[in-house]
Length: 234
Ligand SMILES: [Mg+2]
Image (cartoon, rainbow, N blue to C red; front, top):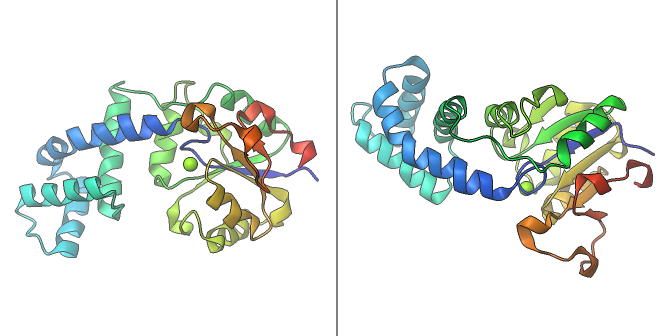
């Protein structure tokens, strides 16, 4: 039976991993320190710095030490709430200034529109915060795509390789799991989704890995483009 909700991953699935790694993260690394020095008195930034100070014991007055802590977390890819929130603010600044646009593979927007027109509800599940996801689709190379999505999920529902996260997703979407399709480039995420009965398609972009899907074996149907996803066949 055709799915009536589709949940997609972003990095490696709708979009290149390189954009996030080489553009967004590099931009945050470069501009976060000055952004904090300049805006530390403003409410949203001040709130995050206060929370960071409380959680680490670094005195709030010691702005440079707080910045150093954030830079350390960035190097370690530690996704603390404060770091994520502050990175989101820096990314928003970059998007608004037109420094970059979010990468989307060209086969994606048309297919999402086709599914939406067919009455399918579309969702995103990504490790990027919900706010970062909305920014991403607002400032994409194909313009503002936010209206395509009925909702966004991030790791506040759980880690992406844990079946419980997908059970939480099923509960939120409030459909039987077999009516939901999950798209990702990571097999372990698909395994976790399949474990609770969600349908899966493995999106393997040749631009990302160079993997030849004809040589792979998997219980998940495999495609190299959204164009090749055939809902009738699932
Ligand atoms: Mg991914």
